[in-house]
Image 1 (cartoon, rainbow, N blue to C red):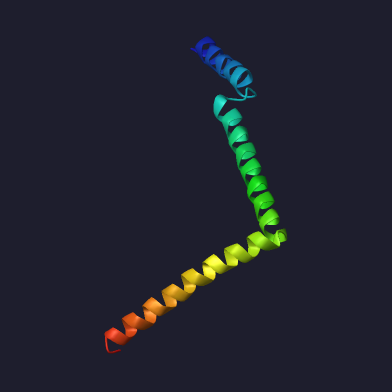
Image 2 (cartoon, rainbow, N blue to C red):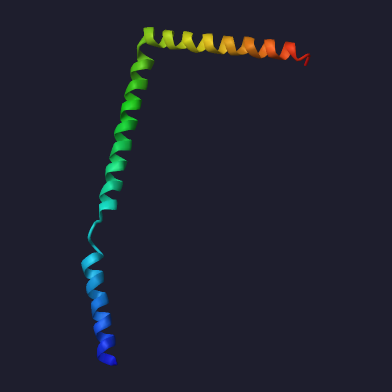
Length: 85
């Protein structure tokens, strides 16, 4: 019985040595995903920097948001007035 146990432990050690240090496909994919997120973040930051430094674009975006908020405020005021609240 002892030789079988020794063989079993020997095979376990061999398996750990063979498969322990090998990077798997999931590890490689995880690294690729991290790189994709870093690139996406860099592009978003570059766009935000461009928009914040370009005065014409900044005023256009600010005006669009102001129109949306004004319309939303007017709709909220009208809705509150019509409910009698």
